[in-house]
Amino acid sequence: MNEYSDERFTAREAFRSDHMKVVWGYFEPGQFVPVYAPSSDIASHVRDGLRRGVFDPKAEVGD
Image (tube, rainbow, N blue to C red; front, side, top):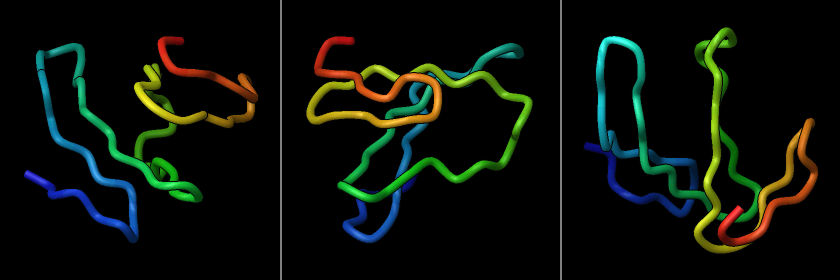
């Protein structure tokens, strides 16, 4: 299990099945999810702070 890091994105696995993997992701400003499976779909749920991205430039808590 990965521990939180001030220097890079970290994740903890919350659930796994044959078709899906769910992780808790922890970010600081300027950190990002490294691309390791380009064909994967990613869904984000923001608990605190803001998210910026290519397709959805802003998301807020609860989005």
